[in-house]
Image 1: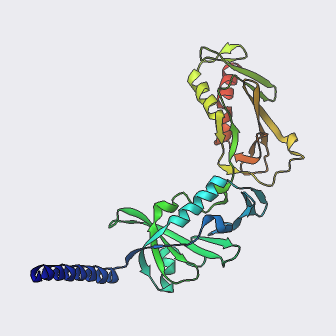
Image 2: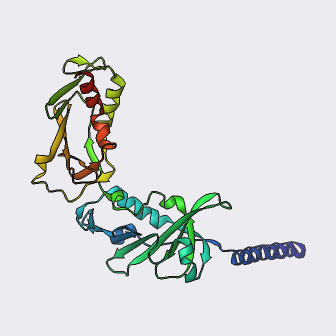
Image 3: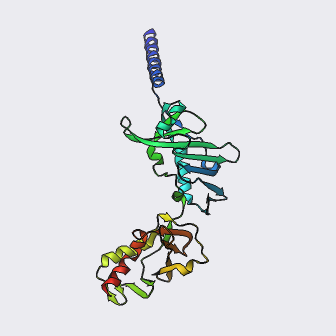
Length: 311
């Protein structure tokens, strides 16, 4: 019995020694895992975002949706994008304490005007702000890390950079960029530009007829039809005067799908850096801009090719 008790005491001592060594080893190290921002996404009523050298903007909760607010932009935000950001912020854990000196902030891209400042507002709590700085690759952890600090504190931490890899800090990340969204295969297209009025029909033999003639590049048209089913833009056009825009119409494309039709208008405003403005009645609040080599070029490519071959 005494021998068994001795073994139990020795085992307990070993556990204590091991635990103590682990504790002191952790104290000597700067590595730990802790919640960066402790909050519940449902409690957030407003998000302020300010990226260096870009105008700040806000995302405001309004009943069951989110609204974007920045200078001339006041529109519905992408609910999916906002909720994804909040989930990622909630789940982020710090992995190391890098510095406790304010003098080091700029080295990590965390100075007062550096990086991305993100503030969460709550109805009954003070706001919580975090600044996200530069990214670096950690050979030790074999992962991309981001440097960050809570705005009211001096400490600089690292977090898993992949957690915020989708977060650019730009207003465009939360805007709706959809121009057309089709539910099925297009039966026919009608394109009008100046003196040209072209009708393209998709036959059961998977051919495209333009004004009754077989096109020479069926793959080009097949890819074109697929793109129109889920057409999105990258650059947004703001300050649009919708009352006078009709005089700038450059071309119009109608996509027919059974009994449904989708209309895409292109306007040309030579006073803009990107002179082509794209808009559809399907997504009325979305205005996309393009230069001559971007989305506009993709949309007129098959038509332009057909016109040049039949002049």
